[in-house]
Length: 170
Image (cartoon, rainbow, N blue to C red):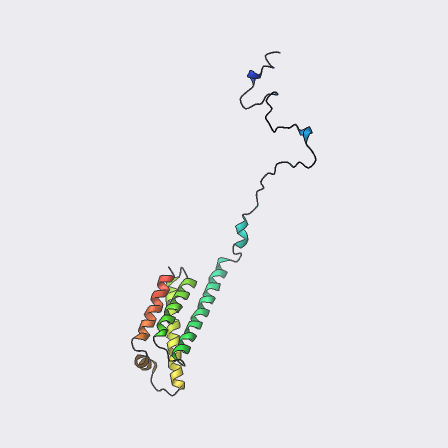
């Protein structure tokens, strides 16, 4: 019996009755106001899930396409207004680059669609400039008018819109 009470016979990892560490209190020593140690809780989902899009991927594609189409129409209107009533020529280069950047970033992985929409937007805008000239009494066809008024800037606008859309969409 004396061998059982020997503190040297304790298995590794077990504590004997004489091994009381500072801070250890028996359960009966709990005082009012003492709180048990707080255990961390695991959430069902990470908190960042609340920011995840709930819609289907198709809805995101349709939404991006609708936004891109809206930007293309707005870009064409900007070119028509700036090139028509305001008679701007060189500044349309900057507008063409902005159209390409906006459409390229809106349609990020779809480079061909972004380039086509950017070039189409610039073409429609230049046709709007030509139509404004017709309202004011012009008689030239679109290609002759753009060659006379814009010169080499018209093809350069197309090139800049396409290049900026291609670079931005990658």
